[in-house]
Image 1 (cartoon, rainbow, N blue to C red):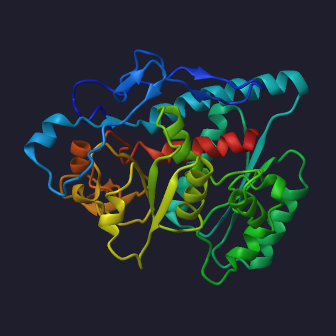
Image 2 (image 1 turned 135 degrees about the vertical axis):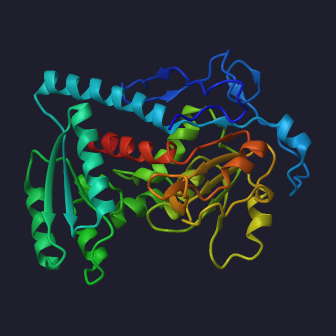
Length: 349
């Protein structure tokens, strides 16, 4: 599916890549001509926020607002090209090729698809991929043995245990068994602890939250001083996303299943990251005029017009968000491709 600008007047435009002084993957800086959001100076992007957001989507709002597409698919492609060039440079310079190992337990079709996509992504950038598939009835010790083997393998630089694991396994014990130097998923408690502490740096940041922040960076969205709301508090996305936003000096609120007045709280946000897994939960009435929305949710809903009988939607009601937000990620084609790109980036680093 091809996604275009919600305003139908122009497609999303990407920003020139600028590596940092160490030659690492850098961020994109906004040149004078970029029109993602209205800008008041050549390099500073500003937002048009309503001081009193209205919960009603009006016809006037539909014509005045023109949300820009945050195209994760295209940005991920650009990042993969950058990674491929660095992998080749590393191979020529020191003779080392990064390696990523994936452990899959059981025969869940969605998990098998994710693993297959990760393997293809590795091949596309020149990273070696290793895979262990264990049957559903495997013991926890068998999984730990596979992890131990990859921990000791010098040709493996990153280890990923595909989740979810069978219900009878202790997920915490298994994830903790991955050596922190190869924890490219960023789930090791030491990595999360470092992420939460000021003045400490994690070896790896969880891939999906990292993808959310990277999209904001590459589209020149200012985070410092902004009010951000994260919907969802999972260990995989919500909690680390909130920690990353705090590191960027945003004022962060977390909305979860026990939150009172979630709509009112979310409507105060300049930046919304939704990772709750509820289709179209965030309606237009939840969104402040001019907000930037990163939609992590990937939810199947019935669709008789689709050959598959369903289509994928996000947590955010996309059609309404396009009329109110200044920028928004589509589903699919937003955070998903970027998550795999961040996994490759973690493996490389």
